[in-house]
Length: 310
Image 1 (cartoon, rainbow, N blue to C red):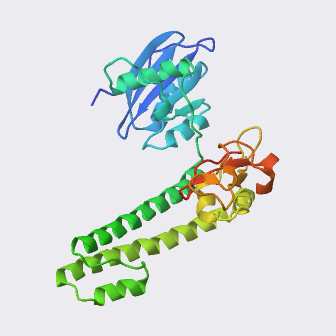
Image 2 (image 1 turned 90 degrees about the horizontal axis):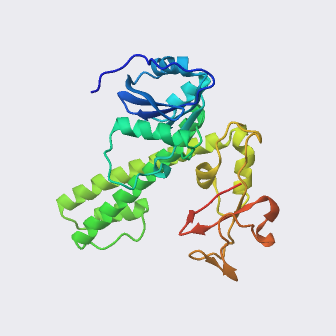
Image 3 (image 1 turned 90 degrees about the vertical axis):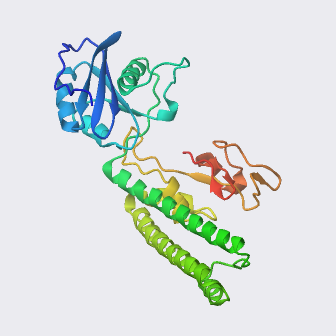
C-alpha cells in the first residue's frame, strides 16, 4: 500500500482555481489536486473521511469542485464534504470519458483524470441522496434481490423435474407442491425438492415483508403526492411507485419535484398499442390517456416501466 501523506504543501488563494479528484476505496483514497492549468499535488490518504476533509480545508477558498466516481463506498464522503462547505460532484462511472489510446491505468491516474475532467467540465453528475433516501432506496434494491432469488429457485426446481422427467408443476401453489412431493419420487429427488421448496417459501415470505416495508415508506407524507400521481393509473401499485417515485428532500429552486406519469393504455402489446405506436419517452400523452399537459409518457414493454419523467 502506498505511503499515506498527512498534508499538502500547496499554497492557494481565492483567485486560484482548484479541482480535486478522488479515487475512493475501502482502505485508501487517492487524491489529485489540479490547480489552474495543471497537476499541483497528489497523495494517498487513509479511509478516514474526516481526516481527508481536514487535509483539504486549507485549500477550501480556492476549491471549485471535488469529484469522485459513484461506487460501493456510497455517498457518505460526499455528504460530509458538503457539510464542510465543499462543492462535491459524484459522477457516474459509465459516463466518465474514456481515453481511446491504450494507456496505463491505476488509482493515482484515475484520481488525476477526475481532477482534470472536473476542471474541464466533462463529468456527468448523479444526484447525491440524503442518508434517509439512501436507506429507503436500499429497501427497493433488496426487493429486487429477493425477487431474483425466487426466480433462481424456481428455475432450479424446473431443471430438476426436467432432468428426472417428472413432469411439470401446473402452478406454484402450495397444494401443487404438496401433491408433487406426495407422488412416487426417488428419495434423493424428494429430498432435493423439499429443500428447494423450503428455500422458495423463505424468499416468498421475505418478499411479503419487504413489500410491507415499502408500503409503509410510501405512506409517509412527503411521498404521498407522487405516489398518488403514479397509482392513479391502472396497473401501478406500491412496487412500481417505490421504484420510480423520486425520493427527494426539497432541494433545488423548485423544491421537491413530483413524478407525474402517463401510462400507456391497457391495449399495449410488446411496445405497441391498438391504433398506433407507443409514444417515445418524454413525448406528451394523448388526451384520452389522462392529463396530457402535466404528464410525460411512460412506455411499458414486457411488463416493465421503461421511462419516467417529470
